[in-house]
Length: 331
Image (cartoon, rainbow, N blue to C red; front, side):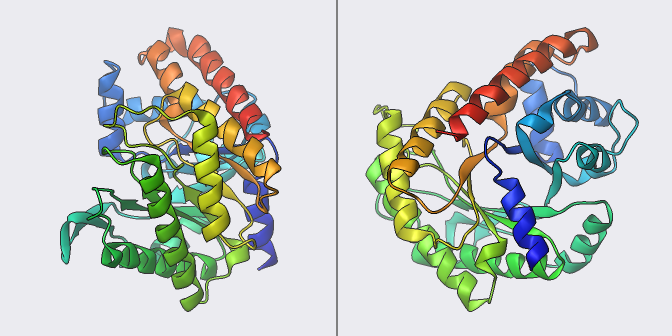
């Protein structure tokens, strides 16, 4: 387990975080199209290379979560993406879940699939150099009715089964039970759901004999629902988020990374800065950092537009945001 612990600790090294570059083919097509960029496998490769090929990212990124298609693609440096990352001291990871489906016992809620055939897929991924993995569950809030305890528990059970398989394969599992920003719920309600979700998760992990010291938690912040008129201050987000984590997350967990979950780049940066500052004041036991996708990519994509001549300015925008988020992770 020593290797797992050292990888987990490397992923939350001070001032560094994760780029979530694990958008599925469908999501990548949609994202590129939203910026007026034509789609296709070669354009998706260029999209990955825009970020993964940026010089100097190793100063701010400890790891990158990849999608299966990207494992077999090469950057403009003619190296396979996982090898290129490893050569720069960045851990390559892989999203291993296979997306969500309705939960039969509560069809308005979602559960995540991908356990069938997982050991075989993990063995294949490990040969490409991946050192960690990610599995996302989706937790929806709707007033006091959702999430249901059954859906939380079923998602926790699947996360635990996944984590056990990943640790057995010699990689670090990132557990992502994402409490969605969608809805009209209050920040207090988001905090309650975070506590219930994370408490259930760690209880079920113990039942499955998953080693807490060899996992990373990826979580949402405690935020008022996006459909509400209320706007949280970074200080409010920090207070509610840290209270939830202190109540629900065991101190043996080597690190926690935050998803941006639909926040703007500026919001995700400011809220992270407030959270890490509050964590220091409360003497939180774990390192906290980022695992962002859109919040790191948005500004660069807006100037890239899929054109080679725009790559230098797009990469400059990406590095600028990376520097800000890295500074925010230090509180």
